Length: 125
Image (cartoon, rainbow, N blue to C red; front, side):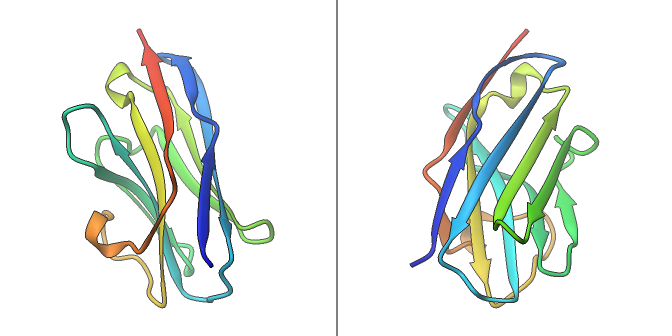
């Protein structure tokens, strides 16, 4: 049973840094695409970063140059390093995964089968 559990959210000042983690339990598949999404109040969920089993990464323009996605393949933890966050980055952040395929472009909700419960990030000015 695949399960994703996020942690690391909280409050941070603009210009600071925060690192989100997502432990991925219960998978043994060699091909995958994993991603981070976020959803602010009143807005649609948007994909912001992805990484796949070929180690390719993709970023949305809104976070490019500030956020970094990575994955520790030994511990099966997906990370999102958030540097220089802005108040507009305030949202609920979700990790997601899909198996038997690699990533293709900026992640879309409909492409992912497994989701974490979310972790809240609040950026103050």
